[in-house]
Length: 196
Image (cartoon, rainbow, N blue to C red; front, top):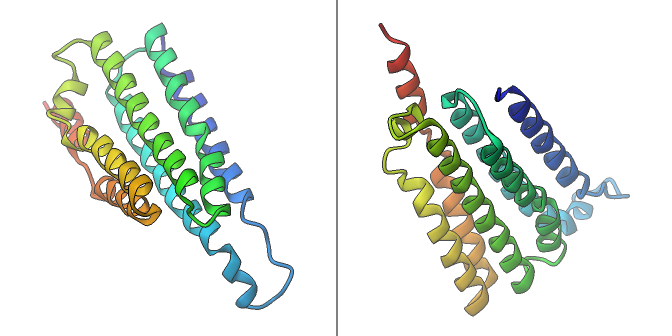
């Protein structure tokens, strides 16, 4: 099967997710800076989730560049990832509307963990389809970032539940910042593959 429809559908869903999240930011009825103050938790949670959706979009795009084709397992794994990503507007809104309270922050962390595991499943399905000598395997190598992120989510969940939701938020921010560091693995492998 061709991968074009999977990429186009995924791009559309991710764009809708970002749109839904921004709609949670209600415009104040007063033209003062003080009117913006109650929005800070909602805006902060929106910024974090926007960052995560952007990271997933970027990594999904790069990963699909290494794929030559898709099959039913890949389509199912991709839908599984999109399901968990589509819950981000809900968990983001719940966390922001409740000023980063313990339970909503933990649910947000569970959502991030589920997204990470779903992405790993999609990656695994693509590797199975393309084989152990594929560009994807060469590009990801040990995949320290992919394996390390769930640890930060679990630490964040434990910290939020046992001590303070802000510990959880801090761990979720650290995991996002790790992914912000430019990752050239796929681009290097793709460039080397194109070279004569």
